[in-house]
Length: 423
Image 1 (spheres, rainbow, N blue to C red):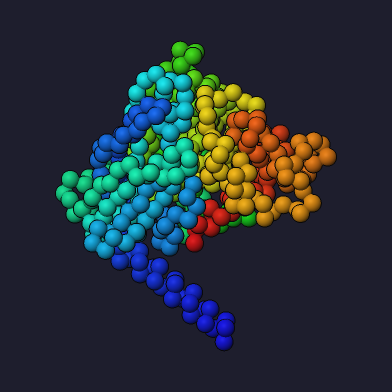
Image 2 (image 1 turned 45 degrees about the vertical axis):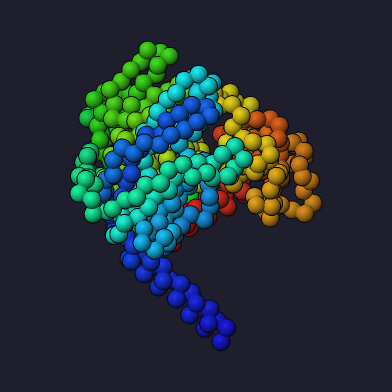
């Protein structure tokens, strides 16, 4: 009898979830582009355009964000009933730039955009920014009428799609769209081969291996005018689709793009949960930002592990676990606040992290010695700083490329995100 009641409750919840989506949304995407501008201590938002995109690849069930990851957050409310119908957390390049020395001296603007299922009726969209104390503060509200004739339904950069893995309905899969940068027109076959190579590379690593059927992966066949990409310190400048460049924030290996509008335009060619940019270069580099985009080079000897490491950031919200590598960031974490990343902690609220995975005999903090090489623990050093921030293992793919495994905390976080997008 108890099992029957549970089944009825689950069935009722499932039906109500489907009804909620069909009541509020079409199977298309609304995209709102805006400028995010400011300096190290201020920020402003300026709306640029609203578009209707032809696909929606996200879940029809998990419409509300349950993770609360990211430095920013947006919510979509039905205007008439004030019901919250969609929400997501994310981070941006602007948020990272705010922590650099340059942000103390000048003001700068960055192009950004958010996506959600296209609403049937009027909505109100709210943007939030996480403050130094870890609290989301409301920054902008925008009423949107989906029937407004200024909403652009055109596909600005139409290109063919190359499917490397098709596991089923996009709304029940993690949809990764791979974008090329620096592949010339005669290198599209190379790009296809790289899409295949990186797809197979992804599923060499657990937990991705066991969840292969939860993914769809495709590439957008968009050639650049020139091969390669920008290396400013070497006076190398290339005309490419996405204008990616090494030396982002004057860090040589940090390869990113500020042309987010082109990134969004290209990725609109297919259902998309995660954007991955492959850069045609042998130089070591890459980067990723949670629910923004991922980027890595295609031909470096470490390219496979770069790909996996960066997807950990962009997809699962994992933080860097290393602390002895120079970066251009300053005061990235408040030691009095628990970081939102699931694999690092300040021990302010360790109960919310991987404490449940630890053996009762493991000391907290855990000595960073060879005795504990194979022990999941709490090791000081992570998030770019040597003191006050702790990581789960002495080493992990989010720390170095010496091994080929994610720690248990990262493993659990990745699985949770896969299931969230594929239910």
